[in-house]
Image (cartoon, rainbow, N blue to C red):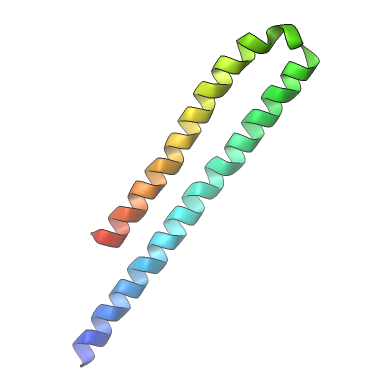
Length: 82
């Protein structure tokens, strides 16, 4: 009976750790994408002729930041199922 309570507690700790990992892991990239797009749009608004030169690095930056969120998701799954 006591052993089952300990196993349940370990699963609860893993679930909480997974939730914290994905929460923190997605919070940062969300802020990063918001800042990146806002500054790019601000730059395009100031200099519309340079929009093609700004859009490509913006999309590359978004992909890199989004990869961090996916990495956080993978870490969360490792925490949960390891």
